[in-house]
Length: 331
Image (cartoon, rainbow, N blue to C red; front, side, top):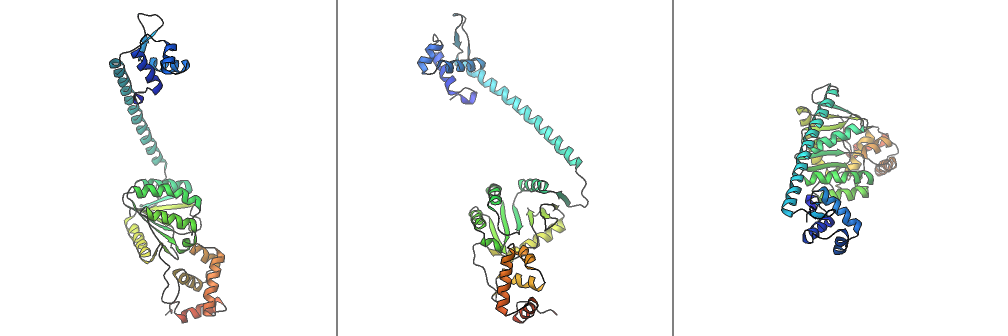
């Protein structure tokens, strides 16, 4: 009952008993409350510290409980003093934090171009993402190439995604079609959809990208090593173009959970992309990376397409793909 004032249940029981039975000593209190004498002594120490008991003026060596109207006033005054001290500590901490932030900002190198912030290393990238996510007000839009996610990365993402969606942030993410074959990713996306997240897939994505409230875009400097570094773009013209790119890809993407759409040529979106990449001369490894699949899978898809056209070489495949209408005729 009095825990909010710093008094635990055992000490409160001793205090109440001493008010009702002022003649009781340690042994009598222990028997009356069915507590060990050491526990009663501990409670007496706490009551003495809180000034709720004092030495008796009439009986030397005995303690007497302070009347509750006095004792409760003392406890509340003590708590108010502690609260005031805590507020002073918080104020001092805020001032120190503001000073540290200002000093750190002064140490950062000046941005080479307006609207462009360079980030180096994974720690700096993650810190920036966390900062931008914390300040989100309406929407986050993401291109997420790379195929299925590991259970570890999914477990790490769940709390952050749940926090954003619980704040009413709209979340739209475009994955590669290949994630439909990753059971951990399928389960994660289903969970995300239940919370209000929107997910679509396409065969190929131009880059990894995160757009925050259409006010900032984070893009890796290298598609080969996304951990090496990134840039944060805030220029209005650049953001307008990147938002338009996202909306175009989003409009053409297939909602997750919907059956894969087959085009008029009898090709899925992934197969259409493989046809185009084969015609460009990309290797199986390069195609696999673009699609977020293994080289073995990319090779299997390519071989299936060649068999469907009866092509014995990739050059012949390109010719027959044009004849079949799988590739546009170049002027």
